[in-house]
Length: 188
Image (cartoon, rainbow, N blue to C red):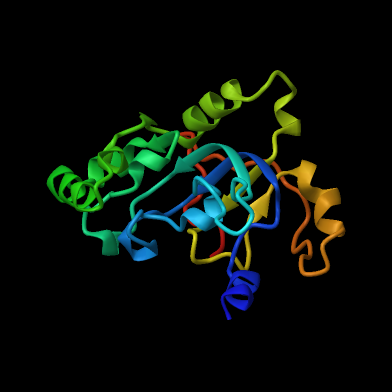
């Protein structure tokens, strides 16, 4: 039964992601604010003894889910966050939960930026030297909603080889508003 559960467990189909944008984090998605299996931040896969896939170079949180009521436990898993996550965070609740989980780093606040343009520029600057058009970027609503997600052009050929994936729309450039932010929520 455990083998079956692992086979049907939701996850991202890619082995390597340069940048993973997550629109919502919070206790609604697990005690770590996200599902660590989805973002590949678990230390080891107990079945194989290897790091859990996918490997995500830069993990970004864009917002804190309202149901979290300020509890941003797990914010420390991110490499970069939007400043609005920090503003919505209740430091007391976040600290208390991180300590209850005996992992104080879950409450550590990563470098944060006001706009998506700033955060993506920072994330792209941390990637190996290459044109930004080649960056492998995946954008999900949260770690519980994986039926649809957006990804950058370098994944297009890879998606064609997966029988359970299909391309739902044409490619388009990131659509930043006047303030330098992307729309909220990848799937409306």
